[in-house]
Length: 542
Image 1 (cartoon, rainbow, N blue to C red):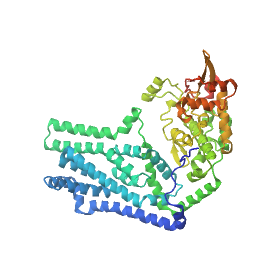
Image 2: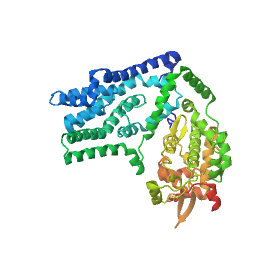
Image 3: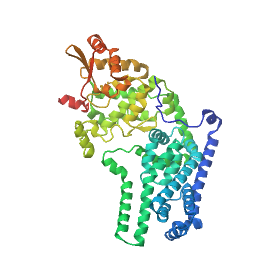
């Protein structure tokens, strides 16, 4: 069975080194390294405020700098060196970008601006990576939920996430430079995403500078038109996420921006109290000794709200805050230490993640219950696809949006299913995870347990074959026809194709069903999928 990285990355500090180094000395070293970064940033501030170089960032100084660079044969070299150094010192580079456009024009200004910004950005990344990455982790502790969520997001969406953030001019350039160095991102990934991501903004800022210069030198209609076009492009690029969201296009990695805002609080916590960090370490050790959470609380919830594969979402929504209810169980899943989960036996991890998917799916529904038809482009797509008015597809980013904290990271339904459960390599999971639709293999009234997960999954497959809404055998002029749930068509690669589906089901089938499945001329068809919410109230009204 294939294994899966089902936990957030553990500390990069080897166990032997961690054991040899005392907590006190580790914190002192971390503080010294962060202090070095602070000195570098302070140097940039002092250069701007206390030296003649800072005068070039004023309105008059910019004009003087432009005049000095023009006509100087070394102007490109001087400009790139100054720009790159300023970026490494976290000096805001917007003014320098505008200078590049004013001095060198649109084409060469864009080239020199991009070269300088990339050199400086990679330098800042290197400083943060060399001095800050391990220091932050030592201060925050390996159990830090903020760092675990950041690590998980970067591992999944590092390139796409950074590229997305680089495309947005409103995201601080220097924050991304130094912040990325604190994350588990490959340098090559950072360099490529930065080179591509900053190019549109650099080109637009350069174009804006050239247009502004022409507009001030002569208020011709062409110059003013270029100035308005440049300003419009800047506004358009700044609101790119909102525009694409309205169009129904999801930008990967935008969650990283929200998660990054927690990093400052995490650092402050680590710097403010070593005792608090030590307390967190003790809490993690206590949790590690306790092992994985019990699933009894989830069984208690399911036994009350699940009946014949349907769910009483009304009752579940009303009792969500019950201390022994779904919210309590989800809190236990969130508090599970990634290291404990990683070290658990495979069957316990499988039960944990199937339960996590199902519990998070219930949370997703009741947070939007009763489900109403979506408006805008999402509503148009749903109507075009024939999705019912109370389908979970009416919920924005229902499967792709991170919404449920499990094992220290905020996760989406797709991440749990496709990036964690499916890679384990057991196709029986498709009979156990429930997507809150009538055609989905039904939710059962008890949680899965690691000790009996094999028997429970076998029973789910047997129940599937015995249910005419998911499996049936017919005849087409003497040729057996097997019709099965559309889910198996969507995930047929997990079974080894259509032939694999037939072979898999034959191992569970009996009598006529098995004979049809093993027939050499059997025809496989799939039921239409009903995305109607599996709500017990709808079932009663039918």
